[in-house]
Image: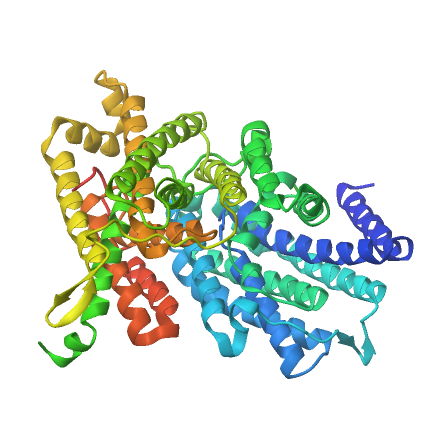
Length: 318
Length: 296
């Protein structure tokens, strides 16, 4: 069996297990699984930036949250149809990512870190103050349950399968991009941007394209979360959402297709399932995990390259 | 006075006061970056710790000794925290910017959680010390004296930092370390001590800014994120590793925060991003970004 066939088989096996899971799991666990799937897609979209392109964004929550707001707004005011809300979420995420990216992608190194962080915080402030559309600090609440082809997905199990479908589709898009010439170019930029430029690639356009695609898919993930939670708050846009997802990518190991998803599952379980039993100190746990990962797991982190000419290419994990 | 200035005089003054505070906060962040190439994401939480120190040591209506004690304690604790951070970051000196930023981010999460566990989730308001809690008439308009004092203090500190960095031998060492730390090391100076000192002073200034800002912003959870955001924007606009850039950036952002909210209300956040984008498109290294060497 070739490596590619083995990978495909592993993929299908994982999807099969996830498809059976809602039948076995209880209501709460199925809801958590839906949240993990949304968060895993979010983490995978960030990995397109961090792992594949070498652009470590500290504000990816901005696009996720924008998508969540867009999907929630459409569900409340226009239609409950799942695909429509997700398309709106993708477009909204892509537009905000295009605006922010056209500035951020020009910067490199620490400037890029700072800018993406600042964008995330600014978008959160906008959500706080744009009362008429976003509901201000209360957020958008009582979002109606999603409908797919006329069937209501109010039941937790049905929603979980819907989430699995969206997750699989999003991952498939990301995998296609990773394998396509675009993905190869992005990896080249990560490993040695000056050389790519010398070869005639307009690296700015490629990096911006990666930024927008990652923003669109993060938006879809946000739309999925909005449909699951039936609630969107400004916290979904800012630091409180950008930091855990970066942690998920870092724990899982970037530039692998399963790493960010595994990391997302660990983070969601730490924060949402174990967090409440720790007396609301979920962020404390995340902080400790961050410090521990930085000091104890440097191998997984070492592949990240920011700035130009940061070093020779390391073996890419694919 | 032209009518427009007359109408927004208070906002203009507020902008100066916020700018002074932002300068005290951001100058450390800028120098730490210029010197060590480290993005210190714990800078905002140091500011918040300073604000809580003011509330804890001085209470809601502090006397002068209490307020000064809070400034001293916050400064000392900030210096200690900065030294610790410097030592931890130094261990990651050969790793990527992201690793170092992640370390300070993890410590921020831990510290912010500890602060909200210790002081609760309530908003604490703190009055200025006696004598500064009233308001004065300027051109026929009442204005809080404390904010005038902040503007004055900001000007004095800016002058002091400028003199130290530009006119003393310590300043020369700092500028040299920003420009080329390997050269500084190879002429026999232990550049790690220079970095430690700058990190300690920068962190102490951030904590002191928290105490000084307490009568304006109070002390509440989430203030650390706001402070970090504004300091980052100031540093990006002004240019990394530049004292003059930090001052100009702080005043610009102070005016945008204050005038922008007064004139455009809800659009102020867009203006903040617009200013950031404009500066980066026109001058990618910031207004006073030093290609090599710190300039005051």
